[in-house]
Structures are given as structure tokens and as C-alpha cells.
Length: 147
Image (cartoon, rainbow, N blue to C red; front, side):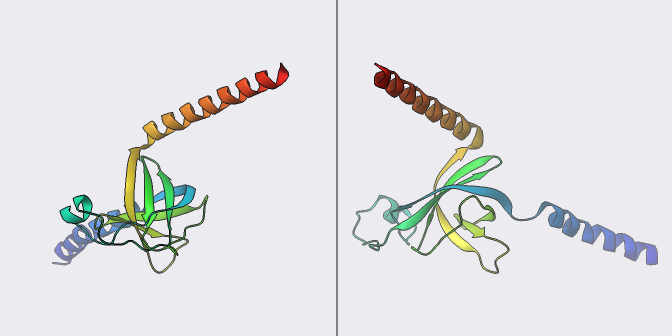
């Protein structure tokens, strides 16, 4: 009887051990921030495609670029005080079509709307392309100054 009990106990506790090892949160690094337009609080078809009758607050909201291992997110705070430190590795998870962010083991999560998502490999390729264009422009400017 004890063996059956221990077997049942081991099988029931195994998913908990696996979940603890994998974790609910993903990790990412904040690489960019600027102030942009806040995301409206409503949901659904009419909010997305309806007329802009609902006035959004006049204060700008922070917009962050969050880079994880596989995906790059552009997230927007719901309030102007939704701040995340730059160059920080943060924990985040999906929660009801939002991104819940936890910074430095804080007790509470900050919820952000997802504005844009991109596969990491595509984002890396775009960043390299932008850097090449900037280098080419710098080279042209240097040639003009030499003449």
C-alpha cells in the first residue's frame, strides 16, 4: 500500500517539478524606449475599427522594444508612469492579450499592450540593414568633406 501511495504521489508531483523548472515567465531585454500614443482601454471590433470618438489621455505613454530569444515585441504602457529600466533583463508573460512584465522580482506585474511582434531573426536582419545604410551614409558624408 505504501508503494502505491508513493507512486501516486510521485506521478502527481512530477508536473509541478517540470513547471517549476520551465517557469511561467520568459526573459527579455529592453533595448529601446520612447514616448508614444497610449493604447485605448476598450476592446473589441468597434474599438479597433470604429471612429476615434473616445478621447485618449493627453499624456504620452512609454513604448518599449523588448527583445527575447525568439520574438521582438513593441509594447506600450497603459499609463504614462508604466516605466521599465533600459538594458534590463526582465521577466514577462502573456496574460489576456497583454504582456505582463515583472522587473527585478517586483511583487506586482505591469501590464502592457502589444503593439507589434516580429520574429527575432527578421529583426536582427533589419537591424543589420539599418546599420549598413548608416555606415554608407557616413562614408558618403566623409567623402564630401574630403573634397
